[in-house]
Amino acid sequence: MATKQRKAPPKRASSKPGRGRAASRRAVQEPLAEYRRKRDFTRTGEPKGGRRSAAPKLAYVIQKHAASHLHFDLRLELDGVMKSWAVPKGPSLDPSVKRLAMEVEDHPIEYNAFEGTIPQGEYGGGTVMIWDRGTYRYGGTDADPIGGLRRGYAKGDFKFVLQGKRLKGSWVLVRTRRGDPRRSQWLLFKHRDEFAEPGSDVVGKYQTSAATGRTIEEIAAGKRGRRSAG
Ligand code: MN
Image 1 (tube, rainbow, N blue to C red):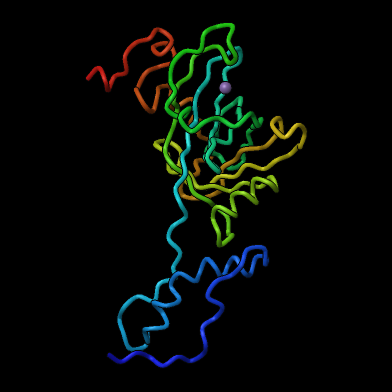
Image 2 (tube, rainbow, N blue to C red):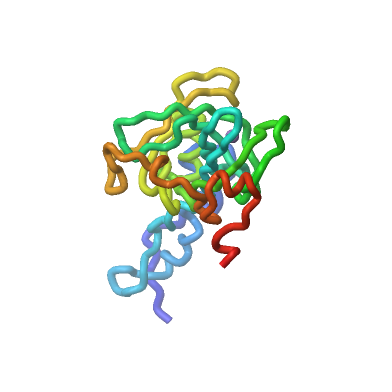
C-alpha cells in the first residue's frame, strides 16, 4: 500500500496545557493530523477535513413572566447553566430598537421547560409562559465558538444566532453598566439580516405559549395545553 512520503516531521504530537492560545489552537486541529499525513489530497477525492463542525447548538428560551411587572426572561445556555436576562419590553425584530436587559441569576437548564404558576408571595410570583424556545449558536468571528461565547460574555459583547420557533437570526447583548455582576445592565437588539423586521411588534404578535398554545390567562387558570388536549 503506497503512502505519501512525509514532507516534514509531524509537529508536536501533543501540546501541554498552559502554553497559551497557539498551543490550544494546535491541540484542537490535531485529531486529523494522522488522517492527513496518510493521504495526498491532490490525488484522492477523499475530504481533507478541517472545516469546523457547525458551532454547537445550545439551548435558548424566552419566558413571558406576568409577575408584579410583566417582563420577558431571555435565557441562553452557557457552561451548563442558563445565563438569564429580564427584558421588560421583550425582544424586537427592529434593529433600531434596543431593549434594556437586566442580568439576573443563572437558572438551571431544566427551567426551560417550566410553564405554570409561581405562588403569590414567592419569589417571582405570577404566571410563566414559554414564549419562544429552540437553540442558539455563537454569532461572532472567533474560531472557537464556546470560547467566543465565554469571551463575549466576559467582555459584555455577546453575539448569538437564534433558531427559535419565533425568533431567528443574529442578535447581540451589549453590556452597558457593570454593577453587581448579576445585576448588570445590557441592551438586547437584533442585527440586520433576513430575519429583521423594522417597525414590527413581535411581542404583540405572539400572545400564546410556543409550547402549549395557551394564553397567560389560560396558564394561570391551569387550563390544559391545546396540544395535549388534542
Ligand atoms: Mn422573571
